[in-house]
Image (cartoon, rainbow, N blue to C red; front, side):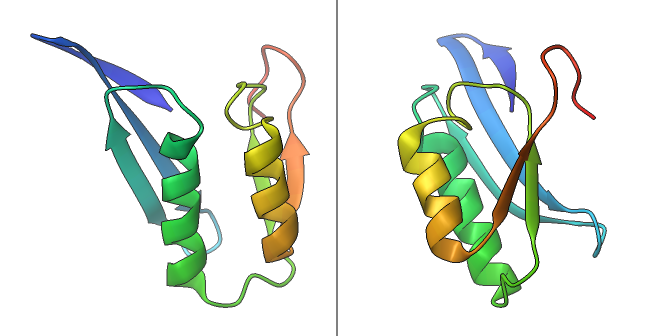
Length: 90
């Protein structure tokens, strides 16, 4: 998740990247940091991928990625969550 300054404040953008296929699988742009922002990008990625078996979703400790709604959506899709240590995106 990143942000871009504009005349009205900030625009926030999220990309879900399929590292195996080396492509962006989903993305979303919004003017708020609510959980719907990364959730929409995740839903696009799930739709694009079709088969979600044996997938791992890696993210940082952002509150949107650790929210109940987001983690439940990962579980419903059968995607294993993975979170790096604080201050480390690896």
